[in-house]
Length: 254
Image 1 (tube, rainbow, N blue to C red):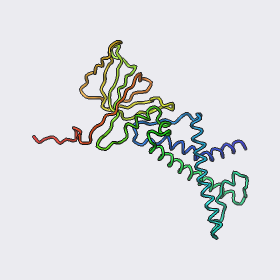
Image 2: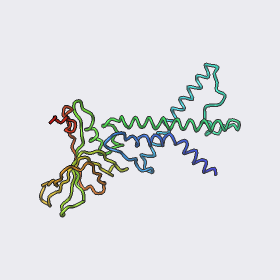
Image 3: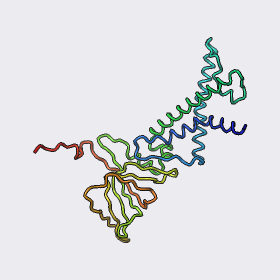
């Protein structure tokens, strides 16, 4: 029973760190690339959880210290001890135990929410050249850096994907605008979603010719599983804001 309670309290204490971990890897927003969290047993996951918990608990400790300092200079006192950390240190009073547990849960929930929101904001605003950005996006970090907004232009990521699928014994590939790239925990491509993509085949060995497969209209959206991708190339396309898409141009009256 004592071991079970110890594990339970350990999870409560680590709750803010787990919230920081979730905030970092649930900060997808509208980004093209969606990072996946590393394995729970990895050293990176453990470091994020532990130091995230230490950081948020440090913020709470500073708040309690300021409360003690304010109490020394004023007559104001709360009718209970707001320092719930004494519960872990063994200074427990039976008449205040219920209040301390309630305060502990409220404080841990508040710290967890603070850690989650702060980590989410930091992840979304991470510089493409930073270590955190490389941790989140791996080899795709420089690609995302190229997609940063530029005045007067819209940027789109174009990909050429060669798969292990075949047509007439020739590898089939797809070319289109990247909508999303979902990564695995080790930063490999799990899924790749293309918009308005064209199909092509690669010539036989010794030929670098790429032949487009004729279609009346491009494929509106296609999702390709990472296990089927044998080769991947990309480029960033710059589209001036002055170019009006064809579907927005009014047709002349007849």
